[in-house]
Image (cartoon, rainbow, N blue to C red):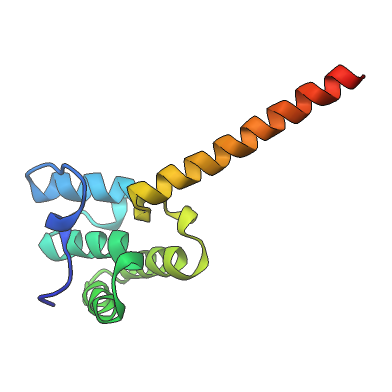
Length: 129
């Protein structure tokens, strides 16, 4: 799994300890604290692989799924696989944590345009009444 980007490649400023990294990333992914109490580097790298999954090439996605599926906690495995697949193949906005800065800015511009248009139409309609 040498080509797979891991936790050090995330665009986040993470705490130093594994427990703190786990808490930060698990919170970001909305994983309940009771899922993994003794998380190690492999579990933390699996969280990172989940976050970056939709931006990986085909080989890296295979490596990411191999890493995720190698975890002993199958409840965690199921959650991470679901989150990775949902944001890759169904809707990236279900996991804003998986979106790039450019995608987030484009999404914000789109929603601002809709809001501006709606405001304009609301004011225009109320003036006509």
